[in-house]
Image (cartoon, rainbow, N blue to C red; front, side):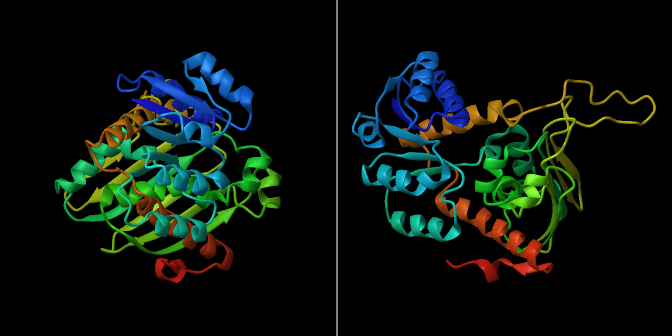
Length: 334
């Protein structure tokens, strides 16, 4: 098949490399407002460069991958749908939930599939955890702990346009908690602090946060996030039930140092970047998209799925600012 990629920055170029290695993909069509970025990707991974999204959509592509700036996501998603071309779009659907709801309403009833990029759904550990929960191996759940710690904060310009740590970072935890447990979040309480980069505080954001999520069956989920984890990129999940407990992310590249006498775990070089931690998940995610394009599977993460994680992020943001519990119903507008 022939896949178009819109946006050839860091993640777009990474997707171009991944797609170029998939057996199902015969050719790529690339476009980016910065022509040199598209040309560089074409030189490295192959592909035809065109000068606009319109030209790409008219280039006979079977599916498109949207890796452009967030502001462009709604328009590119809708352009793909209007052209009848399956769409893969990196999260978020839109910069604000109001815009995301507009996209959802605009695509309701269409038979053109849209897949939103939440890569943890394709990580082997999280897949196994979901299977264990669905099989009842843990019994009734009572506690979930989900962690995402970045090795260093993004640049000031990124932070200013990110929408805040809950919408930019924690949202991955929110999505994977829903996906693994099969439950919905009904209430949150969030806290945050700033003890690192001054520009994060100046942007009105927090660099370290904690959130307590109450799920609809009474399970408690604890989410921990930080922009500062000098030892590496740390993504983990614990799921505790009345029958058993399991963990995702406990491998030899875990960026923690044990101080227990005689303990040698973890023994490997710590994960230091999200692309390192989730290389295989990204490959599985885009392989899934080729199956969506081929019509052999439904979208594994719909626009509606992505918006559910967004409502949790909005509730946590409000909770942080107002120092109180917030229900999802309070922030939901659709």
